[in-house]
Length: 629
Image (cartoon, rainbow, N blue to C red):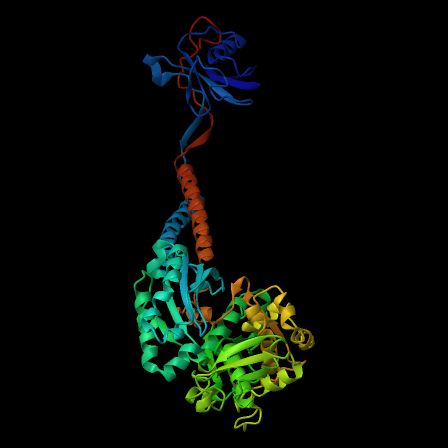
């Protein structure tokens, strides 16, 4: 490597290029320089780098940080004449700050202070929003036949994002039957929920207990009991509330309630569309573009729910403005008004329907001890007691009149009696008997009507059919998008099976013997009742969407906790937005800090002057013609 060594000798500046190795000592370089210019060397000669730093004579070139092409300077270090020592470094003076330096300092200061203030403000705003790591909610679906608990979680910014991200953390089936079955022992209704509440404590993190909303919605079973025995119903609900309040979750007495049929249908619709992602028109690019150029609400799914004691149909018809007020439900979600048709048919749940069907068979037989059941497999014999048939709200009383339009009141001789129903497996007679459950001749006061004189617009759009619909279609081995012809073909072959053949099938025989009636009931309800035809049959029989179970409970919790706001007004501030903002502010701080450091350096660094100054004018003394270094 080559370096340049300079020294002022007399009035001249001598510059000598020297080939060196990084391992050379500084002392060796000084000696080489003196030999090159043929002058004697004294002990008080030192070497400095171009910044004026005195170099250790006993250090190597590499250790001193000298590189190829660098320039070093020889100076005299006589302590007694320190102010006259040879110094041939470029003369320097302090550089006056120019406009560019002042601007650099100003911009750097603004970026640093602004980014610090921004980080503080953003952090304060973020903590004001509901942005915990996760939120939890739990809902009891207290149906007529059983009670299920579903536990949900969602990211902390779902409430502001409105992204529809909900995760089903777990489900639990409570012990015993539905809470309405505790009419003889109301005090036992609450304790039946304990096992599921204990499970919830295992699923929800302890630190989230007091923030986890706990709800219970009782459906048709309790609606019937409330009308028939209001005092018993109140005792059951009180037992339930006491048990729920004894757990460390966020619970108030009004969070356990009996919901109406229209609410059940509407909540099912909200659940189906929330999970399907159709409630937020800006959730995808394509839907956002469509929403921007259209004043119509985005396409949604209709909801078909079939429970044990009631069934619901909810959808937005082609002309929502035509819906009579008593059949309309309105929601505002994400700034969009949804007006939907909804109706709940009390006593038309599958359990009450088959009870009514059997009671009608016995009545039509003249209350004979042995009666044929055309919807049961041939060879199947079933004992049925009169209490099961007659002593329930859907058989007699105001609920039977509301649901079926008529009561079934047996003679005294038919009470306290056990009847036997013998299966015959006759599909034609089965269809005829099932059709009697629907009254298609009742006057239609507001047209068009479904059955029993109930107004219903023509089905429009796609539908999701869940609960018993899905279980039945799946149990028969049919696909989710089963067509009318596929269902009819399966129904024909299944209803022809004998009891012996059914016993050999996989599955619970107790439920399999009901399939012929149930598929006939479902097909009659959908085709003749709701008027689905080959053009409007756009039904998907499914129990879940995106891995989450379908039902009304999620919509119930959404409505109860306002997890989805009426408008997506906070979408500009999300968890991801917070992280992006912090990253930008940190980058601005770093840039500002660099500008500040550079500006300060440029304003305070020495300015290089032209030429060299000789601090020891008497440098050239001694016997040599060039003087002495």
